[in-house]
Length: 189
Length: 189
DNA sequence: GTCTATAATAGGATAGAC
DNA sequence: GTCTATCCTATTATAGAC
Image 1: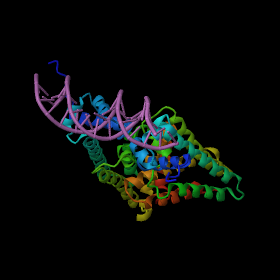
Image 2: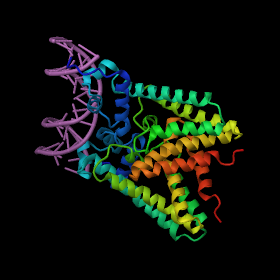
Image 3: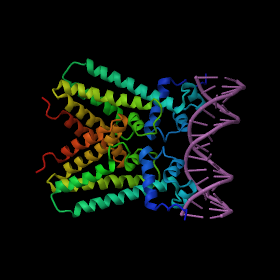
Image 4: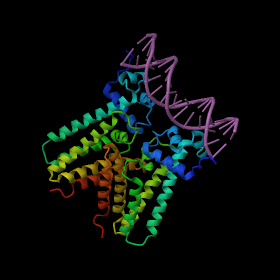
């Protein structure tokens, strides 16, 4: 059998994600996606009849599932809220790396709006914030303050990616996230 | 004279900027730009032979000039560094409004990279940071700390726009900027 | 499921009249 | 300086063979 192993749907989604994270939704063409996956355009349409929009929504869906799984692991973990928060942070850092690649959700928030995408983006940010808020609440941070700190943290994640790319300096992302973590946890009992 | 008043180049640039800030560089087509300016595509090419790329670079150039002018006003002002910083912040808030429109520079940082654009983006972010660093230094903040706070502030500006759009809540931008200003100035003599 | 081929359209850009 | 008309390419999308 000279036939190359069929790529799994998961593998296809991973490669699509990689492409979207490199250039953003608007600047990534079907030709780019075909090259990234090793499939021809027509084959991509077999997996995703809705085209590019369905592809990116599927990627977002996968990201959200993996995120939910990480949150569940964090939630079921024993240990202090701070320790669990650290684990959650580590998951995020593993995902974002040096901050040179885009956040698919964040990118969609500033791309041409497509039907069904706005809701997914809002859900993504909300889920992210909710994890932070819950941990902070457990640490004794008042509700409103916890919400603001979570907003601030997620905004800083997003902004750090923008600056890392804009100033073309991969050190920036980690520096900013490190500081952000300190701020997030400042003055908690 | 039934002839409508010719739009000035400044007016054209303003309208181009408005279009780019609404949808971002990649998602804004020449047709959009023609409609936004009231000119036909061919007329746009008369002003900007380099096409879309030249248009956005001209917009960036204009933004930078206005920014430099605001910085100069701040710099020549009498009063404490904090007071001058407040004035500078007010200029930024006037420009960004509710944070629903994009920052042209920030958007270019996460768009398909074009020749000559990366440098302009980096210059823009650097100029922005430099103002903040100078004021903080005057207030007695050590060099490295001042740089980090400036980075943090600009990143939060950018991230606030992302979250304002992603969560579709125009209150978020002002809330985050207000907090950011506090953090920027915390523990200065 | 994957491909080749092709359609249909949108996007960027130019020529040349007025 | 502005326009109409046009060109060319890229892009999205589909048909249908294998």
